Image 1 (tube, one colour):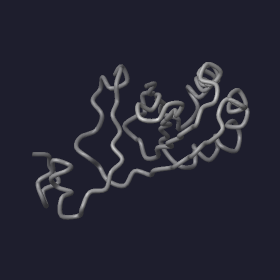
Image 2: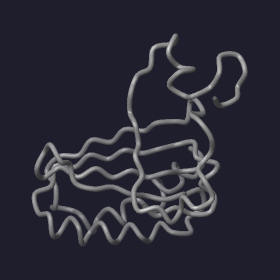
Image 3: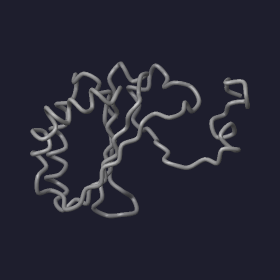
Image 4: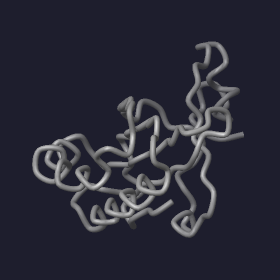
Length: 142
């Protein structure tokens, strides 16, 4: 995963699921997304191949805010995405905005991590404190 120094401000995650038809060409095209480095508001991206579904790739892009993401979509996205044209036959895109702090912020060495896990789940309201490790009403971690 590639992360810029502003990762502490993460508020938007873009999850892209692709049904890939040409794995090699898709991988080569994926390299062009390195052009996002240094783009205002871009915090990093990572991804990999599905273990359950052969030929399915998941990519996660992290953005500091919606306006910077929208500027990228309007100005730069199509030029970079063209490098992967014809390498997939299905794509699903979902955007997630930061709704709740879970635990503490990323540690200082997170940018050098070789593995990051992202949980997409639903937590019942009466179990949120347990899920986040916070004591009810205190706002502090247990």
